[in-house]
Amino acid sequence: MTPEFVADVAGRAHREGLSEETVRRLRGAFPGVSLTYCGDDDVQGVRPVLKLPGLNVYLVDRSEHCVRLTEDHDAATGLVLAEVSDDDEEA
Image 1: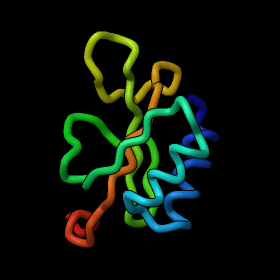
Image 2 (image 1 turned 45 degrees about the horizontal axis):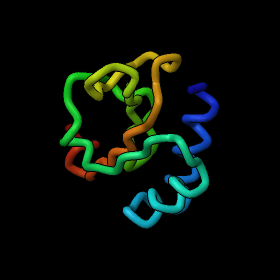
Image 3 (image 1 turned 135 degrees about the vertical axis):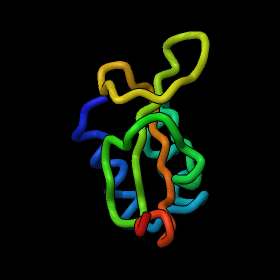
């Protein structure tokens, strides 16, 4: 998964406004790519690979038995689009 692809998906999510509906549309636009929507405070243990206002993007690796977050674009099979609240941005 290239950084350019990640930026494209994140840019679309940011422009449309991050929501369950936006993620549903993105899943239709990018079949075969795992896309997950959650709050940024639900993600721990790894840094986002991309930050936009109100949105942090994390890489998912589903290649092994268990799903894990990664910072390795080559290992990534999906994205977590995490909504950042105003409180999170100030922290």
